[in-house]
Length: 366
Image 1 (tube, rainbow, N blue to C red):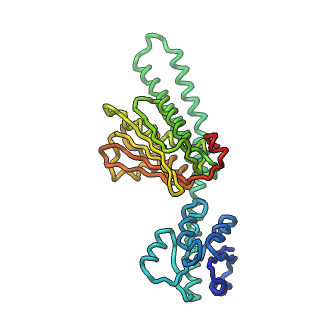
Image 2: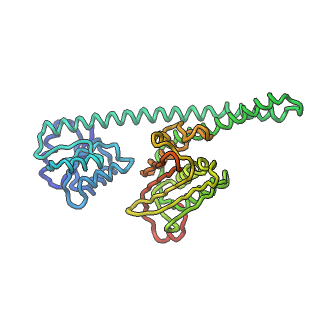
């Protein structure tokens, strides 16, 4: 049975919509304002929401925006109910994520038809998500099973190396070295693929995490592993608390900082600048480098699996795909900007978390 949530501050409007859908076989629920609606959606997500635009306190536009900004509720179709006929208001509704509109006064056949259409959309989304989860499970299982034979190949190559005589043909030594190098690359790829699949299969547990500390830890990892570039950090405050997963956030930031270091390494004086700032309920981390950049036509493709900013630079091609998956799991945003000539700027935006004064004084991730 499909669940439909009707949100309107006027009881008579809720009653009319309930009557319109009474014979459609849905489970109907009601909320009298935007705040109550968000609470009900989080407690038991419906399949479709009928949302009035003009409500006191939290209006329909803001309610819709908040629901669409939350990864747990973003895929629920929202049909806005309005007496407004202004194109600008309709555009605003679509921009915040509305699926459709129903105009007042209500037409019962139109209400029913639009709810049915929204339910078809929701069903298609659910099927795609189910198929995606099956594919991710298969990828996870395959990469897990491939680790054992790959370890055997790598171990055998190491044994051969240890038993080579001093006068062994250099060509043989070269081929064994190639086996070891390629086995190492495959290990890295399998680890990244497992991380990517795992991030898609499992619900990411969020906590209050210090973004500044996560970035400092990522800088230590990158500089200890690679070095070479001058990496600087500009911050307005010692701690910026966000909603994220501490371990995954360090990995994300290490990947972005590592990319900036890697792709600027060929410059005479390579540098990477990281800035963290917060405003309007959001924290933003900006990572700039002076590398060669990415062509604007390729800027969005690098977030796809197995795409890299440059074929000349080593990597598995999964780093930014993992970054995107984790950041979206934190209900945040990540994007890149580049003119293709003067470096890349990476942006990460995350929701700020409320932190009590005792934890703020400690200054560490939860």
